[in-house]
Amino acid sequence: MKGMSGIPQDFDPEAPEDFDSAHRDYARLRRECPVAHTDGLGGFWALTRYEDVKRAASDSVTFITSVQNVIPRVAYTGRRPPLHLDPPQHTPYRRALNPLLGAERSESFAPKTREIARELLAPMVAKGGGDICGEFSSHFPVRVFGEWMRMPPRSLETLHDAGRAFILSVHQNRPETMKETSLRLYDMARELIALRRAEPDDPALDPTSALLAARHEGAPLPEEMIVGTVRQVLVVGMVAPMVMIGSICVHLTRHPELQDQLRVDPGLIGDALEEFLRLYSPYRGFARTAVRDVELCGRTIPAGEAISLLYASANRDEAVFPQGDQFVMNRPNIAEHLAFGRGPHNCPGIHLGRMQLRVALEELLAATPRGFTLDGAITMSRWPEIGALAVPLRFG
Image 1 (cartoon, one colour):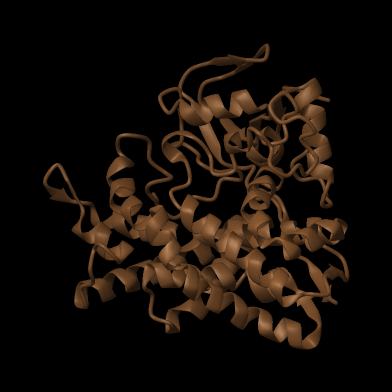
Image 2 (cartoon, helix red, strand yellow):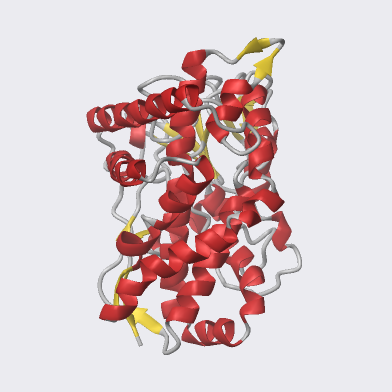
């Protein structure tokens, strides 16, 4: 069927989904139409196979991010480095933030992260369950991120509410609400920057101070770009852990034997987590734009048109990961998964993200020695994420 663009409509990104349906559709596309097109969500091309996604993510000369970086388009309120810029323009912002996101520093937050996890799980344990996303994983990364950002505690509830409102408006594809909620987050960014100017902090410890202290070719970073970066940082680390934890919990309710295995031998959790990241990669809507016509799999993508890098599909590509839709502990090539992206825009928070997910899973399993089961309907996220937004659980 052809859409308004005159190009065949290979899939519908706005169709209702359950926990498995999108993955079934992506498997079909990998087999039959690996470079797919749709008029949905503003119109875009989708790369579904591993090698094509990896190539586009790695080639920042041909596939740029500065035109459109996510599907659906959500950048209505200003440029937000580093995601919205291409190399080398994005590099000063990554250079300022990367030292604060290294493996050793990320692990230094593990004790506080564990404390936060136990605090949030305690009321769920007391009442025998609840929505692991709404009651735990929507708050958990905000609290951890607040520690990393060295935010005043009074700001965390506002960040949670504003960030969640923005995320929901994106999932509902409501542009006016996206603008409104994004501007609230910009206000928070400006307040945090003003606080750091009034009360300077150590740039080796504080991300906002690091951006203020950064120099590029001898000059400070532009003020509006610092605001955009802090705005980006405030929300980017909230969504993926929330969705990932929900999806992991759905999987574990379907496979109680794996729950038991990980409780008995917590040393397996790190390896299991990598397979969960591959199997339930939470992003499908990161976008690029080709600067010239590009031919892939026999189809020509015209220059200037949006392209989605379907990480969630690429990580199940059977040509790279045999039995790609199955959980396989200790896959020999698990390090090749693309859950954190590739190339110059790979996720800078890879170590902080892994630490959060590991601690969350350790504490959830420890808090539920009699196991947990699904206790109601799952609510699914929409583009640009993929995974569970609400997962009601019954403990024991």
